[in-house]
Length: 161
Image (cartoon, rainbow, N blue to C red; front, side, top):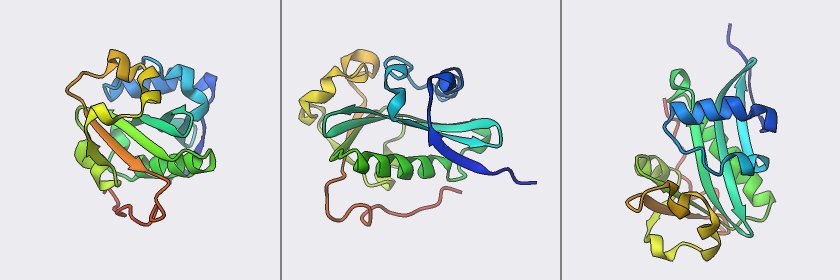
């Protein structure tokens, strides 16, 4: 029997499960809990199987904490969460998404992100724990302009099976 999957807004009560997913994926916890209002989770039945979040700073946001339970990776959950988060960001008038990654640049390039020089990051993002030292200086900085008239059509649709 296949369980129904549901994407919903995260709540403070979800933090222990979110933290466990982030730990499993070896992603930083610093600063994440303070931004739970901009996190989405995916439940399968009564279990959380994925999470993705934003840290919003005006019209720009840092994409962070995209994690899927190990047993559910490569099933499209990460992409579904990303698409839902992009839709939320657009509703909230976010014009640009940015991220730092040490391991997932090829994945995010498939989603339309472009590698940029970290020195070109919007100044507002410097308030993030990730920019203040949680992510190493060697992390790849990437950007996706949501305000582009071509979005979301420019994103390469790919099911990660």
